[in-house]
Length: 185
Image (cartoon, rainbow, N blue to C red):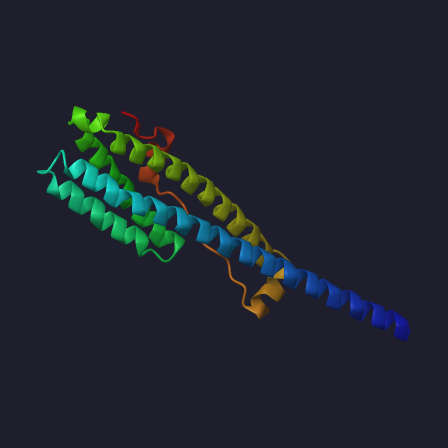
């Protein structure tokens, strides 16, 4: 009888250890994925000043566009949560479209090697941001499932594990993703 009780206690303790380790693994995976997103957003933000300087040389009178892009870049760098990052992302995408619209008006700029290189880097970074966003959302989904399902939800609540928000694109950006802006000149 004592052996059976000890086995039940050992199985229960092992179950709690497995649940806890699973929650920790999922939580760390989400944090790592968020870090990947912030690295890519920073990489893109670092490309923008070079892009602006290149365009400025050709379009000195487009000050408002440059100010909007700079403001959007700052918002993106200061975003602390997926929701804030998504809002800043929308603002940044809009500002970036403006700068490419300005570039359309200057054929010499479109032929500039530095501008072409920056465009290629930007397209590559956009692809990496999309991949990082998918990885983050998948990791957040896995953690949220663990936090919501029985019996892990009881243990997660006691140990302070919380759901993570998704990095979602708002409805107005959905159309631009379905038909992305062509950035090749």
